[in-house]
Length: 333
Image (tube, rainbow, N blue to C red):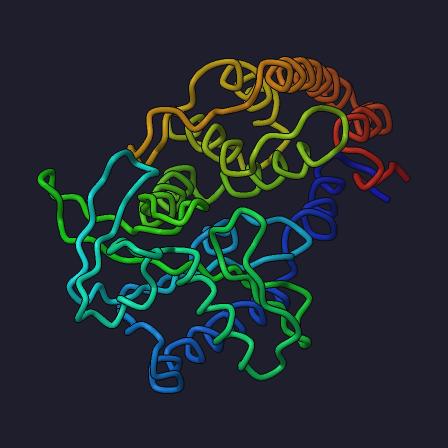
């Protein structure tokens, strides 16, 4: 219950949207604990690939602090030593890794081929993860890109992504090569996403993240087609990166412009901030129309809510915000 829009948003973010600080701290400790267990695998299992410890990193929305409740997964990249393997890029998402006979990786090649099979690597992670204390279940995720581990002691699962770290290419860039879901590999670089979110958030005095999380909550409601969380995050960060004025500490002030940006951006190409692929927007046309319509409509509702707040009709304004965010947004009273 709230009597002002400010108090309503404070309660909404604290109790509904943002991760609890205690949960976040416990989750980070659990992630570090699992990283340490994975580092033991090459000594524990004779045929486990050698690890490139320095390049293993957390990634995903939890590591970028853009995750909203509930905390259901934590993403980790576990990096392997190439031990003589080399890669050939046919496209950004079709990388072939060739493994010499003498390499420790040779047992993970495709049948009758010298190319490394990412599914066999993931299966080895799944097998090794099943030896971890508090193990409940380990499996390849449905996209065939990660080893997913569920422990008995946590509500969240861990998505462990095996990878290789490349030498610098001709343009000086390095990449992580991760499974592409089809038995081979693809390029990514989560460092760029991480650093970009930090930089743009700092540019706006730390005010971007709360807006971004509220927008992620907004799209979760079954009022429109859903877009991938990373696509939505990219659109929002693009918006703040282009803004000249510093974002307000009050989330509601930013939302009309954000919703209109989402409405426009979803109808067009969305450039990959990592510059690995040209367009990350692969939504079909009907989904784009659905999202555009809802975002435009809710932008107008934001204008109405802010007008009502301006004339001191707090009940009317809060009720309008409940139309946008649903019944989890605090009621007036």
